[in-house]
Image (cartoon, helix red, strand yellow):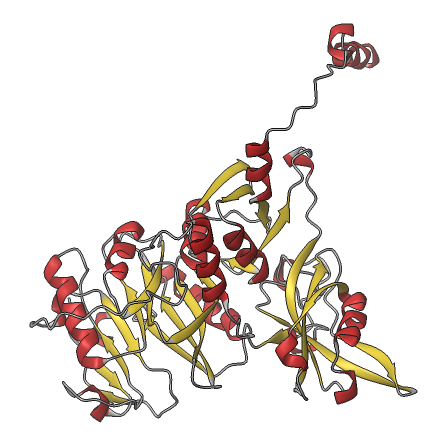
Length: 476
């Protein structure tokens, strides 16, 4: 046995030719340097398998890079994100963290000299909120001090420093190998004070050990005899989203500069086209449309009326001009026909929703995006589904600010806010697991999403919760 091991080790030795070091002349390719400067390397912070194609398409749809984006898979769960505009790359770095299927996307910049297999991912950039900070300490130096206790300081919300605010907001690089800090004790004016810390758009993390990348059910430190509410960490670490400022203007300005004055086609703005096209006044019924949830996000009491769930029925009368809230749900069938798209135009014009969730579109994600691009008053995204019914899609009016909290093959979760209002709302469109044996997974999804935000929350879509045909009203 020992002789066999020695023999195998001998075979592993390098020959003299293999040990020779090849020296090359150091030549700098300016084009390659520029490409590397516009690239990021990344991986999802998970050990579980995931839909690679879904991750790529979702990331592109949500980020909407003005100059395009190429994502290449280098190895299992290791990707290169090649941008073609510094503004697009800076937008991704600034507006993160990004997540897919509730798993954080870790991103690093490259020097160009490292082996991609040896790149180490140690930090993720989060917006952090520290609450009940004395007015005199709501400053950048104090934010830097607090950031040093949980990671490293990146930037501070300058608008947040004007006057007094309920929280001090800043961006910090958080070490993914350490537990998330629930708070910090700092001496202020000679007195030690405790400050609670919360994290914006926090993805999967463990309530038992406090680390990112897994939930407590898969943690070695989790004691099944302990209730979730008794675990040291919990949903209170999640903070409501921070409205980003000026992202469209920055992207558009940078794009105009790179185009050297050439006229663009006004498809650059994240919140929608810069020109509003007229919506055709099409006749017909919505029978051939995809299943849709259409809503305005103002708070109101929901009542039932047949197939429509309506808030304030007066708002949905044909031709009515009102800003009052409405929530409607329409059972429909696919967008594969031109008449179906025309009918959807008509429905949007009649009901005037501010947010639309579509499921069972019967299209590819590329075809769905083509449909969205033809809706001048709306913009949106499409997320690939595992079902043959086609991708999920979310559309919204161009004067509605939308921030993505998470998305996957069976849901799209967003926070919404009118540009003229301070009230934030949350909407989650869900297409539930259709298989009987997987019904519980839909409940688990909703339970998990519940902990992702403290905003007022509305869920719409198809939960596929019907177990027996006699529970249905209409349909096969």
